[in-house]
Length: 422
Image (cartoon, rainbow, N blue to C red):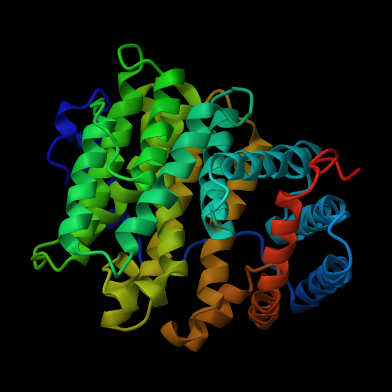
C-alpha cells in the first residue's frame, strides 16, 4: 500500500483496501459470459472482417506511391477499422458507432498532431501509448456526463508517461539515475519549480505546466493528489524491478494500486473533482484495464522479472484460475459503471465488451499457459475463432512497418479532411 495515500484529498486508503478485498473475493470458477457464438457465426464474422482487411491491404500498398494522398489513405483505413469493431465488440448502436468513427478516432489524430508539434522526434509507439490513455480519459468524460474532447490536461497526462516510462525502462540507464529522476519528477508534481536537468525533463516539466494551466492547484487538489499517487505506485514498481527485497510484496495490492491510481488521474483530469462514487469506480476500472494489460504483457513481464498476478499464476501452473478471477472482478466493476447516473447503457455495453474482449483475445494468444479444455470453453464466447485471432495478429505484425511509414507520411502532410475521410 502507498505510504502517503492517507494524506490525500481522495479516499485512496479505503478504495485500495476495498479493491484488494474485491480481488481476493473474486471466484476462481469459470464466469458466466454472454453471448456465446456458434462456429458458423464465428466463421461468418471472420469472413466479413477479412473482406475489410483485404481493402486495408490494398490501401497500404498505395503508401509507396504517393505521400500526397497519405491523409486520405489513413482516413480510409480508419473508417475500415471502425467498420470492423462492431463485429469484435458486438455492439450495434448508432451512438457508439458515431463515437468510434468520429469521437475516438479524432481524439487520436488530434493527440498525434499535437505531440509531433511539441516534439518532432516522438515515436509512433509513444503516441499510441498516449492515445490509449487519452481514450480512457475521454470515455470518462462521457461517463461523467461531459463533452468528449482532448483537453490540455488530458493531452499532458497522456504524454507524461511515455516520456518517463521510456527512461525508467531503459536498461542502459543506471538504477541510481532512475531513482534521482523519479525524485525530481515527484518534486515537480508537488509544485516545485526546479529547473529541468535536460531536454527530456524540459518536456516533462512543460507537460506538468499544461496541467497547472488548466487546473489551479488550490482549486483542484484531487488532480495533483492523483498524479502523486500514480507516481508513488510507479516508484514501488521501479524498486521491485531494481531488485529491492520483495519477499513480502503484495502483488494484488501492487496491481490494484498501479492500475487504479492511473485511471483516477484520468478521471480527475476529465472532471476536475470527483465524488467518492466516481473515484471508486474510476479506480476499479483502472484495475480492470491493468489486469488486461498484464495478461497481454505476460511474456515480456516474465522476461524482465516483473511480478504480476499473471506471472505469479504462470509460475504456479496454468492461468485458468487467475483469468477467471479477472473476469469476475471486471463484471462487478461494469455493474458499478452502470450505476453512474450520467452514463448511457450503450456506452457501458461497449466498454464492458471491450474489457472482456481484451482478456479473451490475450488468453487466445497464450495457449501454452492454459489447459486445452479451458480455451475450448472460452472460445465459445469469442466473436472469432482463436486460430483466426492468432493468424490475423501475425498478419498485422507483418505489416506494422508499412503502418509506421503511413503514419510518418501523414505527419508530414496536410491534415485537412483527415478525420472525416475527405
